[in-house]
Figure 1 (cartoon, rainbow, N blue to C red):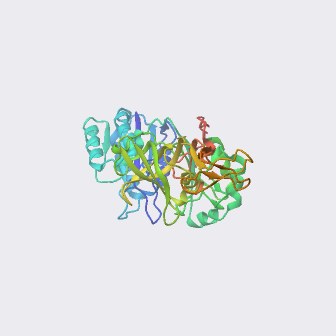
Figure 2 (cartoon, rainbow, N blue to C red):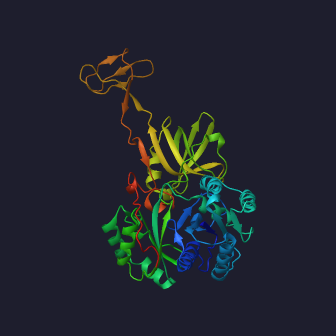
Figure 3 (tube, helix red, strand yellow):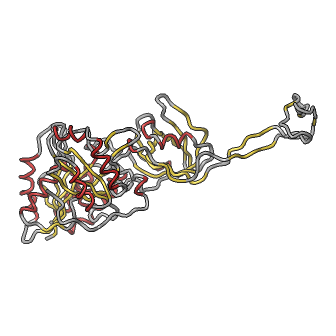
Length: 432
């Protein structure tokens, strides 16, 4: 029987983590000789919703267990979770165990949860209906993590994906790795771009070590599962780890194109329109640009932290046709926080200049209102000559502009992997 297990909201400020719970359950199920249909999934959802865990990530496991009852498996895993998840006021874990027949219905939750705010009541109602049909077994309907758990199952089978190997250990190991710049520079030199987002040379800091410190002490992301496992040999102390297939680095949340008038709070969307007016530089160095389409206008924020993206936004001019990907966050009014910028076409930029002197070729000056022009060199005067319009090249060219590495979100697709495809062959050892 094909069984799909979804987990979410096991994070805790005292060391809990949903991916670590996925690691523990995957280890437990392997000991029970479960046949995994795919690697465990680390599924990132809409990063702009107000209620989420760190990185808004959920985990799902996809396996085949012979002669197993769906609810027996659910209660068995719930018992494991009860012993492993730390009770905390901000933690509300969700566990969904589904048969293969439920994946199609849960895929709608995944698609919605990528780019909009999905009410928990909607997910509960769907899960209850699937439970009545015997396609889902629920041990509880109370957890806020039910939305992520259902969505993580609905992601099966991922069409666009990368990989991440996560290493677990004590805080002391995390602190050592966080200060081991040379180790991660070596990983970057050997494996980039097939292992990416490892080190930021501009900011001179490691991107592969999380700020939380434990139980996740390291995460290497890449397109090759084989190279990710191989790279662990360079990392001192990497003894407990799991390889996840993930929708990270795919821009999966920025697939829906919307008109400005149809945007809702917390949407993640692509918006195409023309720039109105000039960019405005705000306190702190942030850039605000007004974007309009045939349905209305919206202010787009390019924050200082986005680096390259903000620099490109400064060069926008009125009339430029662009596509902005980002999240609608009602923080400073109804604004679109930019995560990507595609310049489709730029409007010509022109200056009106005084004419050249037909006698000596110097640039003429105004002789006064209604008096034409006078050459400062040879003294030639004319009432007939007019100002000339001169178009000049724009510094901003059509193309895709992305944030600096320091501003990458989990779903941001780095420039170095554009056009590359992930390997699909899975190594025999994907967990230790």
